Length: 594
Image 1 (spheres, rainbow, N blue to C red):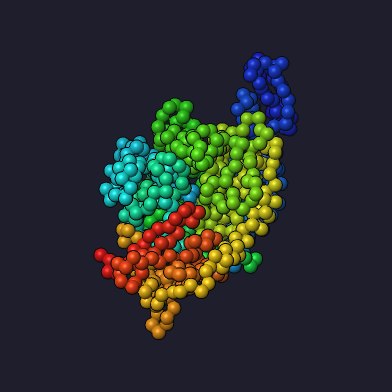
Image 2 (tube, helix red, strand yellow):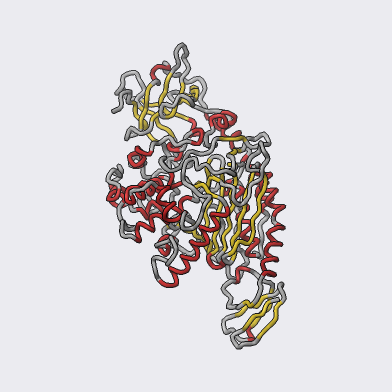
């Protein structure tokens, strides 16, 4: 039992299923009794003695959620999952499901290393915070003053865009994920060409006008860290954050060499997930600052615990650093920088900080990097009916073969970490994290996550068939095609760092596509209509090439154009690289690039 001391020193003995809620005047006459909700963590109740009974109740509820989690994994065709929960600054729960390796059928555990993708972003912002604290740069310093080669084609971005703009996804630049994320989990952009390539990304929106999730900004951030510190990204993080927090199973190397590392899988549509190569994003490659993190549940709970403790300390003291902590500038890093909802202003509802989403419950965690929002009719709202719903920080993560989600509740020093080794039929970690949050908060209104996963699975399974049907319906049959040789050539972006190689093989009239000239992975082109060629491939071929599965018809069409500049030859290609956004990017013929 617990002993609760009221302001008048009146001692009341409570049994584990009861709590005390104090209203504004806090007198004995203003006491109302009701079952405990963890949302009421702002109550001024002092617990004395052992509170393991409370933890036992929480663990009982968390264990009861396991059957729903198993259903989510089934519907999403996820191979394995590792879950960790920190509550009131101590590890409360760890659970593992499925297999980290389908062949050996070995299970994951709290030390199994997963590729944590966009959970990297909080680490990158923490590294920038360290440099800001040392006076090496400021949050408002234009990036072009730090990286002189960042000469963006848009003068406003070139002259005014700051590191805070890129870390909060408010640069307005095109997302262009397909440009850097290649087949077989490799980057198509060399690190030496990264900054130059970023300068060619067209602006979708005016600077600071709208939230547009964009990995390129975090790629720039890792270049800034290396330029200022004189050390590569991984070494800097190891010395300043990973080492001090004793995160021994965390690395940013491309192949860190850990044992007990989860293999990567993708939804196959045939019952068992399809194995793919582990991603090759890490120190020495482009995008390490966006998605290069490899870690385990045990280490990540250490990271977020230290982060929340330092954030609480710095906020309470109006300080920018915490003695003994690697974290600096957290008041700036964790404050809202832009609203994530269309046409919304910064409010307590849903915003982006520098590396995490911020959400005042009730609300949903349908972040732009979780596909679940487009797979169900009504996305689950968490926290409805709660008397004092807390503010949460959260982020999802995705690479080909891995998904993850983390949720922080600073008010109760709570962290939920969910890591999986499958790019499944839906975002399983997003559902599971939401379920666990509702379980911990004991939300009065709970969502049926098993039914949501079932609905999402039915929708997701139809995306590619629907896309193939759309392509077939929109195809104009019987239109003329020019001689194949008129399409042959190399077509470059404006800064000559990325190109399409359209070629023919000896003795064959067929046209083939190789991205950036890599003919080890070639794609056969077919005539779609007029001067539009398609590199449409089956889902089995997507698995074979280990491509990110994108059910957007425009993505598989190359629109050739000619204004006579190159005679009878086609002189440009327009490609819809940023799926979900209007228009396309232009690539011009240059058979002799300098």
